[in-house]
Image (cartoon, rainbow, N blue to C red):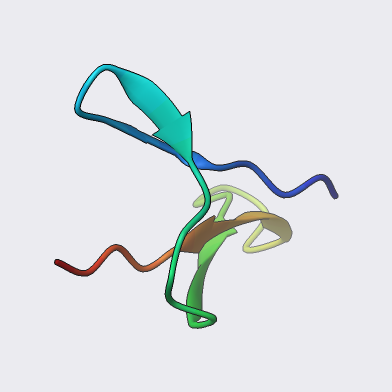
Length: 40
């Protein structure tokens, strides 16, 4: 899986958080990705 940055203030920026939430396919319950938890 690839890791992405967050888009805010009109720019792609690296997240300060190292916490991620799994993205789950509801049909198969397979983890299909991870999303970084945004903070202020």
